[in-house]
Length: 242
Image (cartoon, rainbow, N blue to C red; front, side, top):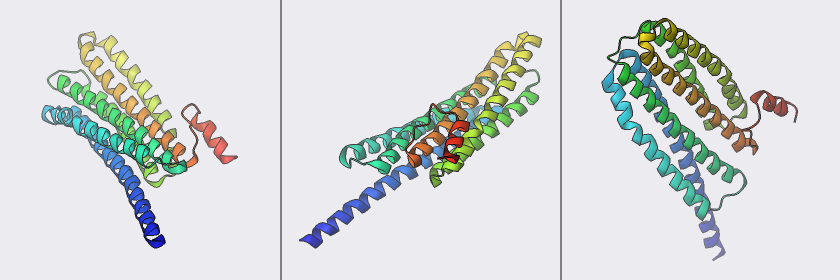
């Protein structure tokens, strides 16, 4: 009887561990899908490819559906398994992470919609502006990739390094806003098109912010510390001098 109870306990524990690992894997797969959405949206903008842009818009529901499914399973684990300590932080970090990933998908959808509107529009200096937007896009995609990698490895140092890149994203974003503002002044007839590009760079900047949030969840998961209202530089100093 005692042996049977021990075996049952081990079985339940093993199943619980599998459930947690499944949640983590699905969250990362959702992140990979969001990465692809960003890439496709920017490609559609570059190539004036309305079919690809429409595909991004139509498939955003996949990211949304994954968020709902993972969130429901997280709720189940919270209610039935009553996780504590590190396991509880894992579930909470996943819930927060998938929310940010879903919002990244929303921003990619917005970029795709801007691509559709701009596809048949003549935009002065379009190639130069797109080149600069692509630079910001590459930075943002790298930030998300690094944030997800830190989540995979539960690596605080990697999370901090990825979060620190948000400063460069913000700086590039500000420069692009200034550049587009100057274009509106010199080419007022194309103001509407430039405004569409402003919405694109704003979406990219927000994606960078969501990636930084994921880094903060990694730190919370590993260290049990809520760092949302602490600067990354301050946090780095604290961790260097515990």
